[in-house]
Image 1 (spheres, rainbow, N blue to C red):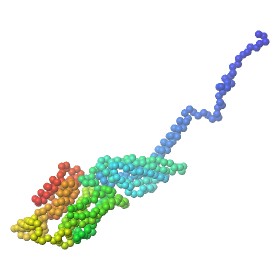
Image 2 (image 1 turned 135 degrees about the vertical axis):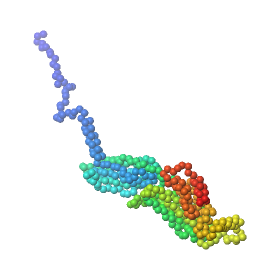
Image 3 (image 1 turned 90 degrees about the vertical axis):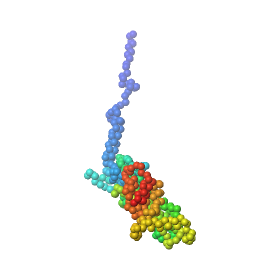
Length: 421
């Protein structure tokens, strides 16, 4: 084996293995493990803090002026925002609800005001709210979307929310369509004197109701003036709500053209509209006065010829004779009575011109109309109000009237009391 060299195998250094050569290290240190999530968390924290800072600088609330309104009573809401921001745009929608009606009663007010030593930008919106039902009525929450200018001059948006408020609404204190107002006036204008109408002359009647602190649709419905002896032409009603510095004013105008068919004197029935006075906290009544129709001159029906004495029905003659006998009985043995006393005694012998209105109101259960007709009947008869009238008043005005009241039964007792009086 001389001359032969022993062959040795050389191990390639590990560093020289091209498969295992590491790339050179960069000149900056490697980011720590989990670096990106930490950056994301930092950005989120910054956004949360920024939003919290905006929330602390913007506050929205709902203020109201009434704790226990009744159904239909106006509650004035003030939506107030206090912003330590430079607001350039805002958008707020008041929420609708079947529990209330509402109307904005003034323009939005933006002004500066110092609150707790800080000069803030103040936003105020005035809303008149009218509850439709009794119980807990909730308003809100209400969102106000703001566009404001940041410190770097860029614009940003945020939403400020006012928490909801709840009103404890009481029932309307009368059995009538709810109508509440601070002030209500009713004017009844006639184009001529209804007691001196001529043949075929038309009487124009215009009734106007104005109420402060309510809406037009809450005013009463137009009354029906139809009578068998009357021709009535009804004009379309006019309803509107006007905004005034004192609050919303509701107005309704009714107009009729009236012409009697016959020449007999007659009385057009009255009407009454109960309403709740929010200042005195009591039920008031707006009366629509009765109209006594008479005619110029004295004669028979417009369309009839004069009739002779011998053609009068026997029943009319008997009625006249009966009245004469009754009058003689009243005056017998007492000497001559004063004219007023004779008139009062005479009127107590027959039902009077309000009998139909009393019967109609009792049959339909219209207690305000029944009360108004009873009052007119008492004045016509010249009698003081009986104690029985207090039962009807309790049904009308008591917050919790007793059950079991019957309008027809009350009218029968009312008539018996008047006959005995």
